[in-house]
Length: 141
Image 1 (spheres, rainbow, N blue to C red):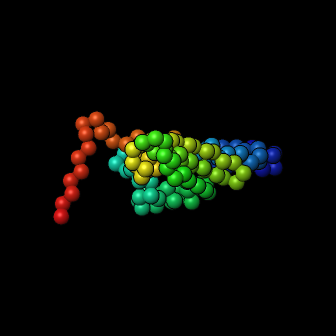
Image 2 (cartoon, rainbow, N blue to C red):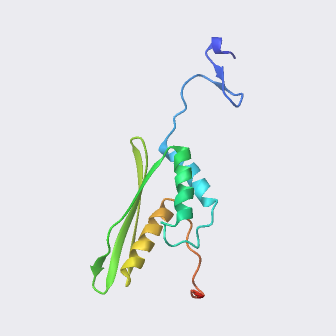
Image 3 (spheres, one colour):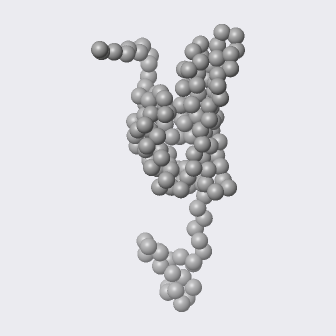
């Protein structure tokens, strides 16, 4: 078929009837998740890590997406602190929201884990490394 017959060839050689292909937020989110899952973020707790922010920023720019992240200050609930975090991914008028909550005896930890959980629920990070054998941190001076 030719353009004269109402069809045109696309870049991959297939025929198109000229109708634009709809480009939804969800299709871009799939690509964003694929890009971000190519990295190992299991060691990462703080989503403000420069490498994570840099890689995420590059992927968002490439796909024309905007991302907002907000974590509410921890609220005291008895002896524990509760924090809620939300990640919003936008493209034009479309948006997807992902939320997470964490309760901890440490207010900073509650915020960090809730924030990471929101990115996990958005599919932008995998679960953290297993700590079933305990956590050991070695500090050298």
